Length: 229
Ligand code: TYD
Image (cartoon, rainbow, N blue to C red; front, side, top):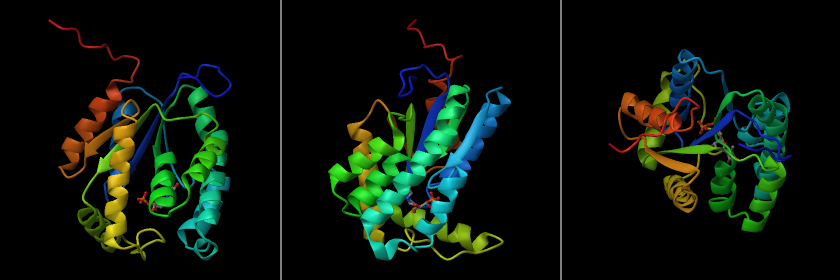
């Protein structure tokens, strides 16, 4: 891939998107382990967050502390966090040749702030441009799951954990909002088919992991394109 200064960078940048409870973190962990076993150097990161500056902003966003100030304020904070993460962590990792697996990226802003937050499209686009400065994922995997199933999984996960947590600012919203987000992710995938792949997340963890790996393998340097017999 090529970074914004035009210099080639040898790493691979993969983002994971989807609604609550779609299994992104489990699948990212599994993919990272598989890639590491095969000798790749992998960086797992997430948004909002991923760098010290962005993690500080994450707390403000997910606690709901910025909610009262409106969607513009939140969108600017997501963009500020993303810019810090891109410049401090992702771009340097890619220039060192790492495979970067990022839990949420630009499409979450397009969907959560743009579509269900009703932020005007021009502002969404402008913030994205400033935040990423040309650094787009090579591949975006959208884990697709019906909203009611995802929310039920997310609730179970919280109840089973050693430290059950209250739903965050975004998890609290109504089921119709979650369903609208699901459709918005599917629309992004349809509009940008060269970057995005939709993964059916309503299957066993193993099947989803195998599907993800087969998509990622097409980007790996060792991958030889299949030839017709
Ligand atoms: P997180 O705890 O990371 O959960 P998840 O497992 O859902 O990824 O929560 C991140 C929340 O922030 C999630 O509800 C989506 C939201 N979000 C946005 O609204 N805009 C963004 O640009 C990003 C990156 C996340």
